Image (cartoon, rainbow, N blue to C red; front, side, top):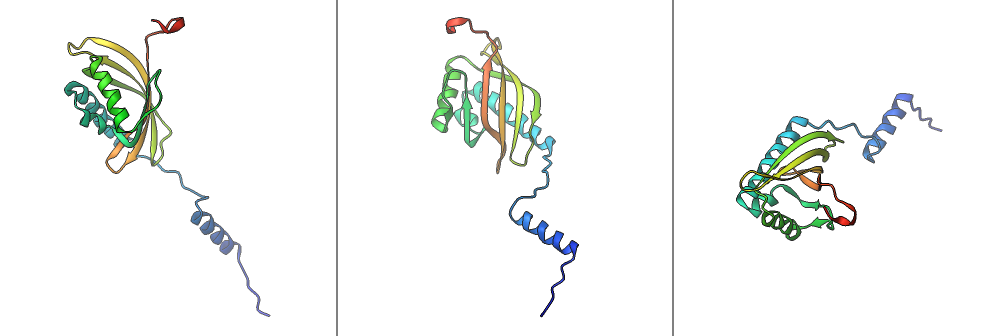
Length: 164
């Protein structure tokens, strides 16, 4: 009869390889926050430029292919036609410039990061027409970090009955 001897280190190595092969053990991913914030700043500038030039194609470059906008009082707007409808509504409302202020980044992974911030909307005379806050989930795409889920709310308080 043949005897097989397995040492503790061999057993540990086999167990480790088995877990890694099945994805049970993962090393934490450290996202380069400088590259993320660089892409975010680029998207923010393109977003503002889209409204200044009323250019739908620029606006769409800001979102991942499966991106969605979650605006107050609206269903989730997903897909190019719905994103364009949101953009066109904003242009008709007089938005011509947007300023973003980042307040925090949370939950870095190799694919997603969440941004908390504030925004201010301006008309063509650079008069402030709205202020609010947002949460955006950013997604890593082959073209860089793009908005995946974009949720915002206006700071204007609503009275009971939905009237300002």
